[in-house]
Image: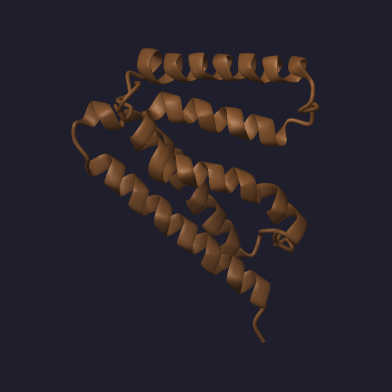
Length: 154
């Protein structure tokens, strides 16, 4: 008799590990190498964690939960939609920094519990978004010297 949740967990973590290895392979085989420094670092960490999870699943040392209920999915769905629009359209159409700033502001507005009827909360959101943009630019352009998608604004 098989333990279905454990088997599903092994398969799911194996798929995640395979995707991680594929992404890492792609990032390590692209040129110019300097443009892929950050993706290489992130994909390497992702692969290590994915393989670790897969190994734990094979050994039966994982705690399998009940997954996401419908309430959790309703909470995640708006953020997922914004992220998909950012990745598949906005970053190319608006430029990386502009699209990321807009997406961050939308996500902050969606998930911030502060009242939407107060001007003070909107000012706070705008300041947090500006700080986020400054950190993103400093991290990618200044510290890591990573090439970001270049379009109409940045």
